[in-house]
Amino acid sequence: MNISSIKTYIALTLVSLFYGVNYSVLKIVVPEYVGPYGFIAFRVLIASGIFWFIHSFNREKIDWKADRWTLILCGLTGVAVNQLLFYKGISLTSAVNGSIIMTLTPVLVLIWASILIGEKITKRKVFGVVLGMVGAVIILYQPDAMLSSGDWRGDILILINGASYACYLVLVKPLMKKYKPMTVVTWVFTLAIIFVIPVGFSQAMDVAFGSLPSKVWWSMAYAIIIVTVVVYFLNAWTLVKVNSSVVGAFIYLQPVFATMTAILFFGEVFLLKHLLAAAFIFSGVWLVTMAKKSS
Image 1: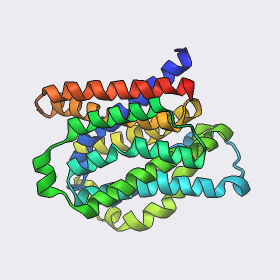
Image 2 (image 1 turned 180 degrees about the vertical axis):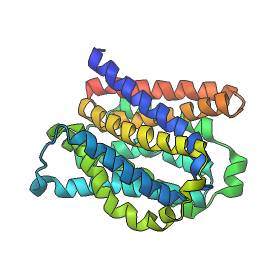
Image 3 (image 1 turned 135 degrees about the vertical axis):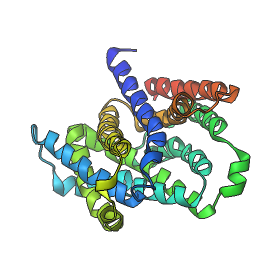
Image 4 (image 1 turned 30 degrees about the horizontal axis):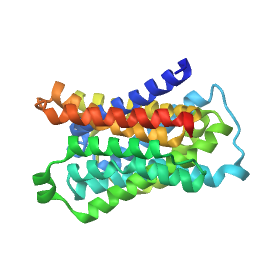
């Protein structure tokens, strides 16, 4: 494994770490202080401003005639539908149901990659994705919670959300070969504004900023700067280096880091199932990343 590959896998691991921590951080903000759609509107608007500030130092022209529809679709699938349906879905179903359904995302990435860009599906990749899914289900599965609070409407929205993000990971990869990662994410977020503002405007206007405690401000800063700006840029940068299926496989690390955060900072008890699940997940991710060499 060369230095470039190591940097790529470290970046993908950091993405999963940041997302994993975010599950706990968001509980501080949404929905007690900021409505979910309003918060998404803030995330997209502020992140777009930050991206444009960075992009202004090294601007790159877009071939709008050739790539406008791909960029619009990336803004729709990777930001708007992805974030809006996830929050709406979780409000209708249980977090357990939603988390387990999201483990289908790497599978959907494999399918989309095969259909849209002809990425080869190898047996090793499939086996790695299945191992990761087993580990994620082990760590998340709570039958009592599922039976008591699941709702098929929310489950469907979460599934569409996962399919949308998987589609984004595939659609955006060819753009990464043509433009710089910062150029792509800047325009993806800018175009996403068209979709999220009409939905989140009302909730955004209802926020009482003057009465927000400091913990909410810090949590919002983390979600916007780290989980939005840094994460989307790192995902874009890694797509230059590896296949979409490899980026998708690292999603399985998120429940591991989410559980670690809950154990370390929120008093959750460490169980044997956590260790077993981590073994499955890390083995699955390793198989998918190694499969890249033979695909």
